[in-house]
Image 1: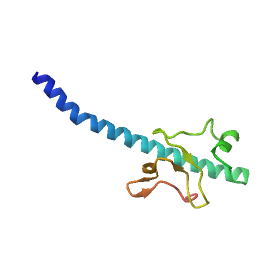
Image 2: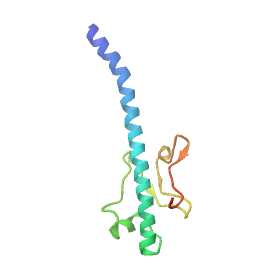
Image 3: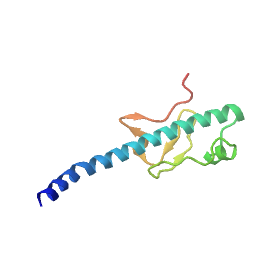
Length: 108
């Protein structure tokens, strides 16, 4: 009975940490996807001399095999203008730690 109680206490400590680590890793992977999409949009603009109409245009042009997906189930949205970046439908992935994850064009 004591062993079961100890295992229960360990689970109470471990489970929240595992959930937090999973959410953090999903947010980090989502941010990496958004940076990759932003870079690919810039590459598309340089090579095609036009803006892609949507993310599917990047797939049909051969830049991606399929539209990248947010690991937490969110969807990506094209930038609204030249000074913004791709955004995720999950707000926490766009603003993590008080800093924006969207880029403002190429950084040379």
